[in-house]
Length: 361
Ligand SMILES: CC(C)(COP(=O)(O)OP(=O)(O)OC[C@H]1O[C@@H](n2cnc3c(N)ncnc32)[C@H](O)[C@@H]1OP(=O)(O)O)[C@@H](O)C(=O)NCCC(=O)NCCSC(=O)/C=C/c1ccc(O)cc1
Ligand SMILES: O=C(O)CCC(=O)C(=O)O
Ligand SMILES: [Fe+2]
Image 1 (cartoon, rainbow, N blue to C red):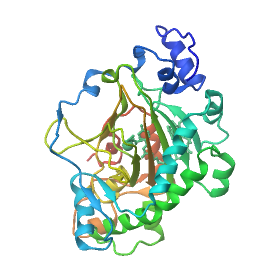
Image 2 (image 1 turned 180 degrees about the horizontal axis):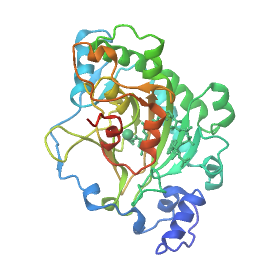
Image 3 (image 1 turned 90 degrees about the vertical axis):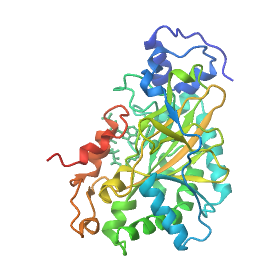
Image 4 (image 1 turned 45 degrees about the horizontal axis):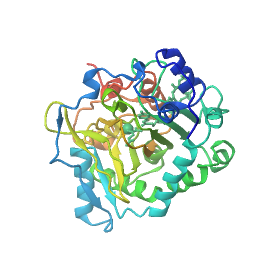
């Protein structure tokens, strides 16, 4: 553990300097043993309280061993319509690959601040590699208790040149081993929308670009006052999310106001969630559901989401097949990179991002 250094926690600009400018992240604050949460991390009450946690509810866990079984494919589509979230087991991604990427995540965040800061927005030689903290600290009124590294995949060559050597191979392997699962899930989901053939254009809309994040949520001195990640829905088509065994991910449930369901860690399982792009492409049939991560007072937590997305230059809107029976389009056509920029330009704001793509009469 790093030696104690004196930072004045009453002075929020010192904290910002230490966490953001020097690259220590909230992990650095946590490891310095701070006893109370710096004020800029204190979230408004309504963002930290979950008035109704449904202990008896859970999102579906789908055994993928019989890939093509109608029961399996139906439960995938049903889950995407009802919950927007499910877990998969026997998914074909080797458990060793999952273990390796978790270890590599610890490897990256275990680097010194001086090493990690090389990948910050200010220092990174490419926009495709970014180490950061919270979500968009420049615009957030209250910060989130999370550090991350975000990697936008262009090619193996670029990854070899730009991604941190300590985690590059393991992340690439995880992305590659998940490809079959991703393609299969999307094929199944498309079939219910009467899309029977995924041509090149559709392939691009569904899987044209991939961004993988590694997230680190260090032990927090006052977990009840802040959040790991605030309420948001992903802007992806779908997200393949690996979590460790700590827990703390909550998904908005269907039982009225402020109902939340915990996503329990299951060894070897992968969480799948529908993102805004697929909600838009399916004209609202598949749901991109709000989720959040609590801060934890006793354990560090990591997660590794693969965001499968349209390409930035794609126009997204309801697929023609979803409108074939006269259904009215809920969403207009939007340029995907405009949509993503809109998401990153503001603090987390629940499900509001998708309004950007809604017809406003
Ligand atoms: C619109 C992008 C992201 C960037 O466009 P660009 O025109 O090349 O411009 P920049 O790379 O300079 O980034 C534009 C802005 O996007 C923001 N940004 C660019 N990536 C990032 C970044 N990973 N992090 C946080 N700001 C960023 C960043 O704010 C930046 O603003 P600026 O402050 O002016 O540099 C473009 O690369 C793009 O469309 N990528 C394809 C798809 C993509 O990455 N999709 C996102 C999937 S991520 C997702 O679903 C959920 C993510 C998430 C993440 C954290 C959470 O807490 C919760 C959820
Ligand atoms: O850490 C998690 O389990 C979820 C993180 C998340 O929602 C995200 O990165 O979009
Ligand atoms: Fe998310």
